[in-house]
Amino acid sequence: MVDPSRQIRDDALQMLETLSVREWAEDGIEGSGGYRAAVVGNLPDSYQQFQYKLSCKPAKDHPELSQLLCEEIMQRQLDAVDIIAQHQVLTCVAPWIENLNFWKLKEGWSDRLLKSLYYVTWRHGDQFPDEIKKLWSTIASKNRNISPVLDFLITKEIEDCDSSATTTEISGAFATYCSVAKRVSLYLARICPQPFHRGSWYAA
Image (cartoon, helix red, strand yellow):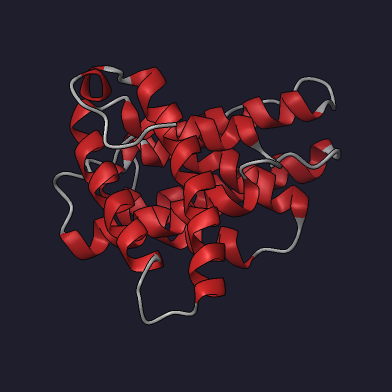
């Protein structure tokens, strides 16, 4: 979608259009009208903005796919080795995360999604701070998402400090946990400070 070649970009949009019509049988779409967009210039910021806006349309039209898609994207993000691809994925997933209501998800689904996002934060939090902040801020934009996230972090701390592990393993796991938990807590508190004012479980 953000290839320097306009022809490749147009072909990619056309492919997305065709898949959309075949999968979802959308009506009233002709040519590339359904996903008509353009990249202005060849700067990375232009590409990133384009990707985000393009991702917003299917996320808005098909919110029922958000849960499965986010889990798949987060797993692929952890498996990816291409830095450029990792950055692009983080940009595209935000509109889908916006559809998630973690308090409504079954416990297993919620835990898997949050665990994947936790490890993505650990791996890429310093490399892509703005994109990681965007993901957690999007989650926190719904107040009722805060409690499931905090519950997950508390459970993760307990798991990482399991007494069956060696002292070295516990020390390393706890250092990782503190780094990620502090970052996530700050993101949540900046968007939704009220729960933290009433009695924060975590002290920076």
